[in-house]
Image (cartoon, rainbow over the protein chains, first blue to last red):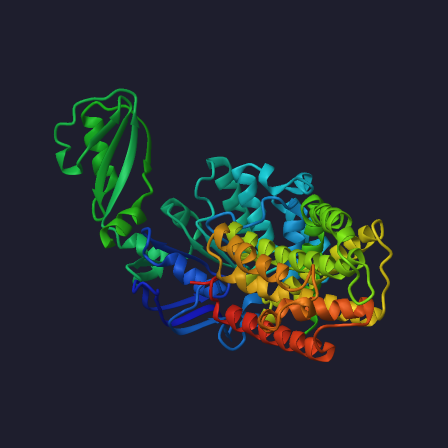
Length: 299
Length: 255
């Protein structure tokens, strides 16, 4: 079964801006799916239509086979949302924000309180349960939104740039938690600017440009689409780069070199040339920005 | 239906918690304002005004002042809470949930009615310090208080839906509501006005609210009580339906 099925989705705003132009998208159940695109590409509009914050102009949207036009309450019951911006009452307590959301989803008070405790503990906010939301740090507020999105135990979690402005430590922690949720069977739909996030976590991705999907594939295949890989080479001292021009070497600092390698070229050949030039190599690793290259080439 | 009922209870509990949490803004101000009206209009000016239909002026203005507090409280509660949720975007908590429109309208309206009744009861208690108000028919008093609160809660929700900034929240209250309340017979009986002004006053819906409410206290009225009650019921139903349609279409809350 598909978690999300979008057919020929169109959204034209009142000012005439066509934000989404006939998008077809299928996210299978259990997938970890990324929507990638530049600002204004239409990612947030698609998500907002899916969760009921924006009215679509035409097209069909189904969540676990529930059409959002005919079975809107059943469709919404399947979705948890972590929006891009903070959208809770800053003057309410953390516990109230989460438990009230559970109530809005029709969960009885006793169960709502139990679920609230569970998710707040999971995101590490239980000791802040009686704190006013406005007193939380930025990272805590973001975790609060994740807890709120999960309190009714949704089958699909939609995250609109959840790690924007989040420090590295928290981002990594959030990735682990999202992986854990996905492993438990929760389908995850993610929009992000961090392509590293997509490469690390997502199985499939769609790239959106000007309201249309320009590429839809597995992250693995999208990576294959790249013909070149950038390698970061750590060296003890910088030596002569003579004979290495074909690799387009870039000296990052006294101990770091970046080179480009075509897919059909052997890494060993490059390393032999470096050793011949008296380089003392301490580490070699791919830069890991393959998807970024593809992304930029499509935009 | 069970889920919707739980969602309704949740929204109502949230709104009532808000009223209690900020009681210095929601419950206290009308008591202070209405006390001043009792002192200035009832004691100082009222002592120079004769009885109206055998009722002292101080007692005569009690229903009007109670109703004024009820209207302002019901309206203010819903418009500020709903627009506040829009402004902070916490309204999205409801929009992404499976709550149906009637739950949102019902939740906000019920909270507005409750605040209206609580404030009305408190102002009535305050009036007891200044006069000895009698109640002719308690059922009529409650009926008019509930219907009036409902009408203004629902009207406030429409205001909240359309409002794009705080100015648009205040404009209706300051330039429409307040004049209509003052001209709705809070301080006088329209039977004492010239015929032209009597007829003009009958175009003001607040007149029917205050007049019917006053009937519940004293047993006399300027206009037909069943007509007033019927008008309020019709207004409630029409405003309810307008709110449902607006929320269904997402006007003012969705792009």
